[in-house]
Image (cartoon, rainbow, N blue to C red; front, side):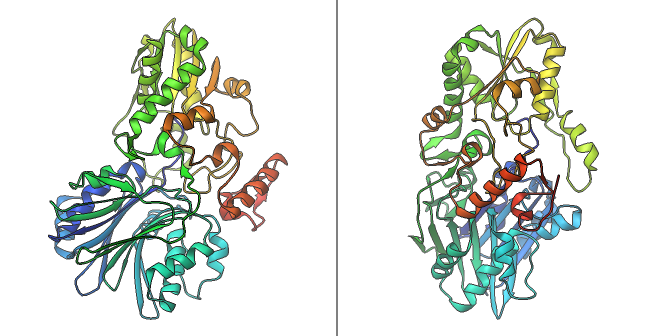
Length: 498
């Protein structure tokens, strides 16, 4: 994706019989680091029931060998959870804020202790936080969710009953891993299964695990894994015992964006590798827009998630794929140290283009999706400036015209280039000769399922409060009013401006 849309988060939970829990969590989080660059953390349950948490800012690969060994020495136990984070709620104005909101988060209430790591977004966060006991932290959705769990846990020791009750309170998407003081690791998917969560075990290496994506299990020797079903709970004991049950399952609405952008190409959903789905997405584009596809001279992917689709486009058309766009692999930037006015400048310099390879040619520019369009427009104009005769943009994802409230940082209408615009207008804004979006039916055929959340495309949301937010946000946007922040954070607060 060429726009600066943040991924959501990655979670992992592990039981290691040989107590090498920190090493297992580290390798899993390293595998999931594409899902969150702002912070990382691990929590381990000791044999005496005490939970210890360690966190850091940036990439987990930045953790020094000395720090890693210190964690191994301090965090002793067989059960642990971990998290990598990009924020989709909360204010991120300083390094201190980022560290405070890093996960896992732990809390105590009336003698009960819980620790959780969380991927997703609670859309009715403000409403739920108003019901919390005084003194409860309301910094972020993770803190609010933890407090909701704790207050129910005080009333009822059974995690199954606690999660069943919170399903009635929460609107949104959530994949949760957690530790209880009684010596259990629990993992839970929301009733619509919007966020990914996989489960697997290996008797050979003595590990049981859950993680946002299957490679985070495979890296620790778990070769066979499966996805949790919507509303499914997995309970893992210190002794290696496993319980699985459906708490509240509803119609599945798995996030379609996982296939197009978020997930690793070697991740498996429904028994199929993501790279295979992306390759088929490229084929579908070439088939659907065959006249344009036949007439291009070269296929150029926007790194990195469009590369598999570009290969599929090549297989269908026979046109050569050229790595004209090269991404700067070691460009690092942190939200807490870069002034806002410099962020756009950095985004526009994260690619280098081999401009002499496009002179006089008709280019099929393949991108995984078009969200805001700023960087994509910059790339198109650079290609045109280098002498490309034509640039035709192909998006493997259908046109995004509505915000996501479920854990992707695109939560206002006005920031979306596809809102209230047709393809011709979008092409003019991008300076492209044409813009060709994947059709919804072709997308579903390519990934092999219709059980997808397509709310950002259709404006139809699987949860009621998110639908209410969208309808009100659309009304304000069409009236020319702009929300000062993400809709789920500001709606009802009157913070809109003309």
